[in-house]
Length: 252
Length: 269
View 1 (tube, rainbow over the protein chains, first blue to last red):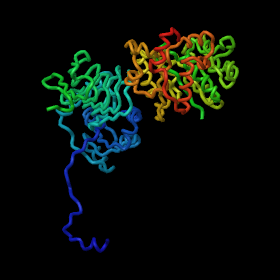
View 2: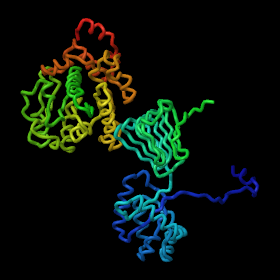
View 3: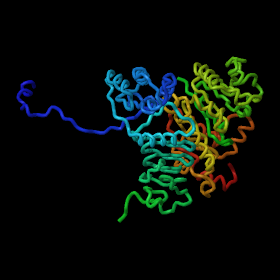
View 4: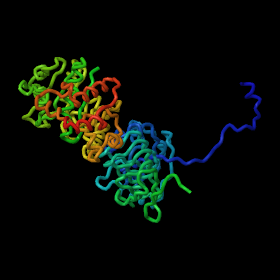
């Protein structure tokens, strides 16, 4: 092996730099009360330990610095690491904070423009109208939720991305997704796709017997479903703000 | 290892207590030491069906509150000495049950019994929740009509999300379907859902079909579990169910109208 390696010409490439984009959650710190921050962060990660474990994270201090609060990076980073998250960057920090971060080998990212921030703030408020949390974890990653168990009457499933269900969805159950919905069995309950306004979301099911179908707020109830589309595999999509129900298998 | 079986349905009046009494007796008759617990605190019935109502001194709530020991409260069945009944309290309500207390009593029973049958109250509130919470197996009793099927479906959702096994991410509860009060001739007339209809909606393993039968009412009135009436169709159906639960292969009966046709002709049952 070693002789082979020696014989290979020097022109062979050993490495390459490429540009690539990743979606990474951003943790926005909204208070300088680090005890409160720690408490809420641990509560949040406890809700979905598998999801948060070793998750990369960018810390955003811009809102806090805008309010004039000054915090020590070492302390915040300590708390984040304690929660099992891996901090991979800082943005919106002061000069001193950036220096502190670099000492901890944490890269610095440039801040968003003022305009972008305020738009994000608005979105946040909309999402959490009742109580303003001190920790907001924004997840940009779109995960697909896969479910293999039947969804029974009275159960409710919410997926932030696409939702795939391999079992039946009973009457009286509700399946909701911000993306597409696939049901590889009978759909008897309510199915709502694109609930955050994605008009391109679709619903696919093996056997349509749904109580209600909806895409981006445009809905039809069972009574409005024509006999010709019931009890067979169909896809449902939005065209000019009306729901189109078509056979999955196209006959020519 | 002891197994906890919950007999549940969501809807009332579908035959939970009849089923609890029958399968508990069936398991004991097969040689397994079995306890059956009435979770319907405030509306106790199991002791009547088991014919031991005149021997009740202490009850489930007394045991939970530490006012009596388990041995003081358990009543040995008059027909089978491997079967014990833990009656419900008639003077209390379901709030007298606590998760911690129920868990403690079940743990104690598990040391001594092979099967523990929990007769759930109707509904999806506290009593029903506690009856199913610790279960390993669930017998979902359903009548062949839409509201019962819908309620069973709701209960199945609760079994798969709110039980101890679900909360601790263990293997899920084994769920079995028991279709009771089945009348093939009415299915034929379209007055009742068929076995296939119900299975299509619930997609659940069918443990057995109990035919609508006078013998069930007779058994309740006389305080002997219907499974002891070996000549009756319902008694045989429950015996089949117990055998299938214990792993025997038995063909399903009482689904078709064959016998019913002659029975109707001769006016018998």
